[in-house]
Length: 323
Image (cartoon, rainbow, N blue to C red; front, top):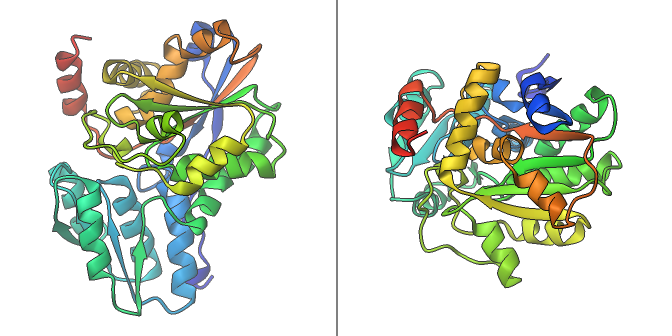
């Protein structure tokens, strides 16, 4: 198989979580995107974007990312034999930068306090005609790639779920999930989009009825840290009849990460903990009580993963939130 024809993402399992199902009283299924080689779902969409570009003569890539998108871009670029430059905001953990350099051979530049500032610098670096600028979440090829996880889940699940639960940062994952749900005939299935307070650009935009830019990211879930969602996300959420946007506190997201580590022996970031908090906490029950969700017999949770987490960091958060 030619390098440019390789599939860059893995088909991940969808498993029933016995511990979480016992808590909720209904079947909870987990789409384990944390098992992707770069550590998150990002490789599906970003891999699809870079692969298409390399087939059309792209000679190098530039990506601004707080971690997961950069890791996916660097992994895809290395696999396809394309040089990569990853621009990181100052808040990115040092071990992520080291991994980008040492494992994936990427050039790493640190620029800006938040992703949006890093992104401006990345677009300047990517002005050459043979260079691909890789946006972490706002491109149709990225959404197309992310939608494949729903194709897989539809084949893996024993039945159509009664609700799909997903975390939201800038909206790339959510776009892929909603487009995938349309494709497999799940347009009638409610979708619950989870954000943490302080990284809630989609919820703020939905409340305002237009795109809103947050002044800053104050949540520990830095990988949900886009100041503005993709415009396509606002459009797709308004088209999906049974869509709910829900906020949880950082404490709830971190608590879900800790419980998930105990229950399934996986480490995930608070960005992923936001979606897990929907089933570990009272989110689904609260939506049912308010008449926004009907009977739930099964739920699909997208375990989006995340590489910017360590045992030490989880322990720090545990102490911070007195969990």
